[in-house]
Length: 616
Image 1 (cartoon, rainbow, N blue to C red):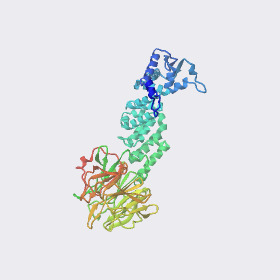
Image 2: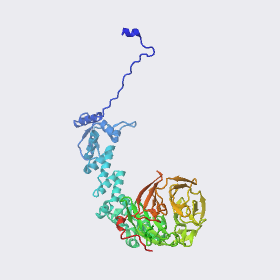
Image 3: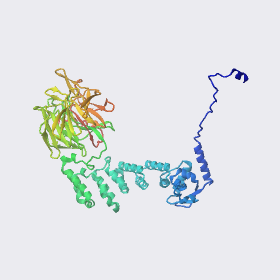
Image 4: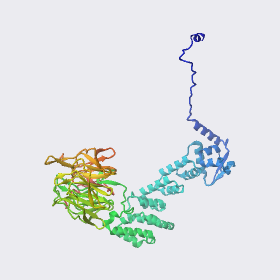
């Protein structure tokens, strides 16, 4: 040491005392050990300072106040002193808990001391009652989970009653969904007679209800009301969920004349009058929609209609939907006549088929003026008033509850006229025509305006965008597209108008596909390029489905063939992908999104029985 001191320390390195190290020790088992220790004290009745007695017996359960207060808001309020003074139970050695059973209280105490509880349907209600009363939230949450997981046809009524008694909203919602999904089984077994009014009303109001007609639902509601005289007060609250307008006229007449219960209720009489008025005005039904006229289906599907197979020169009359669940095409009621190059539009979930052609003819000389309407509620067609002017290669839009047929061509040539269909009058009338005749154009609706893009005028492809305002019956120009095109498609998503595909001239005597796509924003009057298509498609069906754009079938000029492919564009990712095929290569096909009842089985098995029809 003396030698070290003699040499001295470096002047630039002063001696710094070493800092003591600090470590944190955590024992994850300590909490469990403490709890186990208290449980042993409880078992031996050591250091217990209060006894809890259930309401249905005299057996005391010795416990520790501090443990109970730490685990239960109820006991915390009981055993702790507040500024306003404590509860009288603070000084008591024995506390009677009225309303709690021995089973329920024991389960809660066992859980507080062991963090474990064994539940089954036989002891669940007692435990739930105790957990709710004593505010032991972990057990209350587990009771909810167990109740929901154990719902069956046999006990759904009882579980619903328990959920209602204890105000368990999540469990009640689950029971209501279970009842709705199994309503047919419950009705067949008459178990629905024991359901609560809430569960009955929920099931009857559901769009997802399957397997029962509206008349059968009406009879189920009547049986429930008549099961207990006290239920008559719920007549309207139940019957307003039955879709009387979707019954047959004979069924409606039978109810109106024979049901004294409904006739005695003013509100129910209004329901019957509403249904009668709906059925008396079939052409106006699309604009008379309400919660009682909606189809009982909770799923929209991509629907295709018509088209032509060029090789056979045969026009289709098939109406088909694509079932995403089974990844197959299913057949709906076909049209009475075949169609391609037609216009389609949807109002109130009714599908309108306007004009087009029934025979293969590239010049449009066989254009027709007939108009049909498809009702997915009954899977049937209705012919309505025809156009004033035959037209094909044109556009139809649904705007403010009316149809607008724009331009096109027929045996006389290109058309500039525009017609409007008034559903209330079941008639078409001419409105302001386009500035020039157009055919092969596309259109869509945004806000309360109709936009028309491109097309062909006097054998020249166009890139102009025009806008029609039905309030002023006037047309106006907007910014031109970047690319001339015709026989393309157009649709709107939010504040963008998408223009897709089509074709235009390549040289003097040939055509080529337009792969480029663009969208227009009305707010800025500007066009923006977007991802090009994977393959050219002209004269297609287009539908907005689940926020994406589906382009169906059509014709490729580059490949010189009809197409069966369906391309899908994602606006969020700005990319195209091939999703599936239609069953045959079809040009002049049309598509839309529609809420329907998917039929059983796939259409492949029906093709031989219902081929592309030459019927006209």
